[in-house]
Length: 115
Image 1: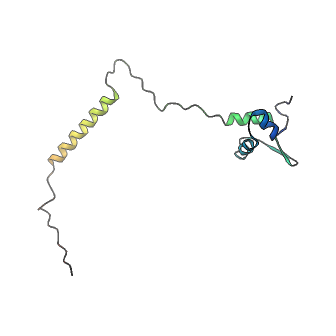
Image 2 (image 1 turned 180 degrees about the vertical axis):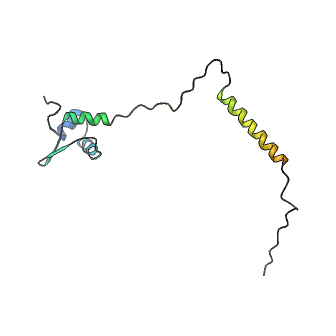
Image 3 (image 1 turned 120 degrees about the vertical axis):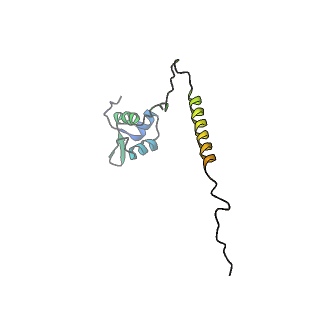
């Protein structure tokens, strides 16, 4: 039985932890796994593989927002958005109706003469 600090080959580490040698080498290239080259072989330790697994942990996704409404507030977000949209449309309509027509006969565009 090996201790956490004993060196083992990448092949043995892959078999023991259920990874491929390719995965361990890739994680070493990414800087997540410490490996040692002794002679022509690459080694690591069980402690190093456990640390790699810790570094590769993906945190659970947290919802972007949580909406909690109290019973006192009876208006929903949809009602507020609809109300704001209606107010914006009414303002735009008033502005549109109160402006003068600037196009038409009041603008005399020069005509181009063809040579």
